[in-house]
Image 1 (cartoon, rainbow, N blue to C red):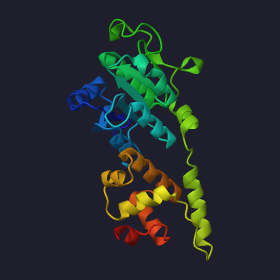
Image 2 (image 1 turned 90 degrees about the vertical axis):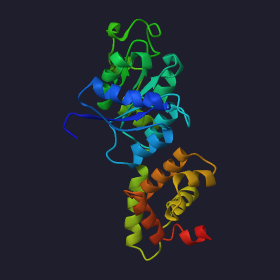
Image 3 (image 1 turned 45 degrees about the horizontal axis):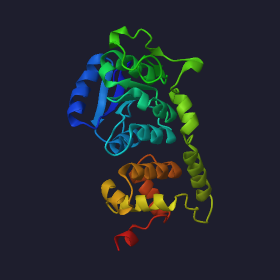
Image 4 (image 1 turned 135 degrees about the horizontal axis):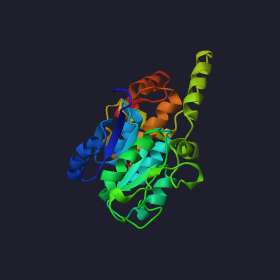
Length: 268
């Protein structure tokens, strides 16, 4: 990716809106490049946590079919995801503003103001900054005038910000990478000892890794465990952190070598 470009992940529930939004966003600024566009929160979580390259900014509709956009943002912040999050909505922004801010988002833009407000919001959030604009549910009349009239659009600094910076959101909601540090320490101790290392995985993490090792899909694992795809991805991400693994395959290999998962028993 050329220097100065801003990479974006796009999440929109409506397939027709998704098809229209992608080129619309890329036309807002020559620096903008959309890495992927998906329709569910679960897919967005998976891409933000597990695929590479990861987006600098996530532009996400608040009303998704599998979970609210606020929940996606919260899960990403809990797992120290550094992407800026810009919410978009066709509903009154006052319905979502406080919730998105509490979940670690940097901006909320009404869909009818995308043309004038989304570009500066993406630029600010890519830099890790909160962004405030007129009519986003925090100040001024709802959807007043047109986008060009909103002279108060600006990045927010100091104590006036409703939305947190990315750094503030991670500090408030994130895990701060403790799992990786602990697992690295455990691995070093195990290597120096004749005793087998203690299993750092929770029972749920073991179930998820075992199922993946047996060749199960995320959807089938979610169905078996009576949970959502997004929750399965979260358990997988936590397992990788605890094992100090860079990928699902590496995590499975570590867990099998240490007898922390037993694929043969799963297949029976």
